[in-house]
Image (cartoon, rainbow over all chains, first blue to last red; front, side):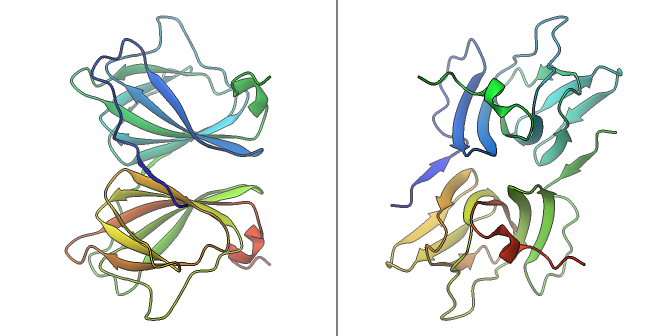
Length: 118
Length: 118
């Protein structure tokens, strides 16, 4: 009945792209695991999200850049709230190992972030 | 504007009791950090919560016991959903160091879990 999963498990050795997996979804929020291995946002790309996002860096390291020029380097345990429409990009993730993020998306147009439904 | 905090920081050396701190609250859910250092639920005590809880063990180790007798030992990265009214207790947390949990409470009677408001 109670099922335990692990955020650090089931990570493939080869990851040409980031892996995004849904952990929990309600009408009000969505929890995701994101695994990166050296990936960054494409040059010139900015996230401009329709929902608020709370993000925790669980393992690894990463740098986020904001449109105002500020850059933040994240270590394990670091967490922050990125309000909707605050433009940002992933400037860097650890090229040597996995970076594991926990993201909680909420408020705003969550539906625009969701996978298509039948 | 963007503020970064760390789940593993600001933990006092002496902790006679667990420390529960709110990270984020909306009308729909509440994210908490819980820090334990060897604490467990009192003998005979069972949580019987009015809301669902998703919990992630970030650091340390712990054992949860459920009313049906099942016991689950948790390591860093382990996460699980504890539906409302599934009775459970914290049987053990690491006596040697901090155990840090992330808990997301949602659905149900969130108000019963909230701090009193004016």
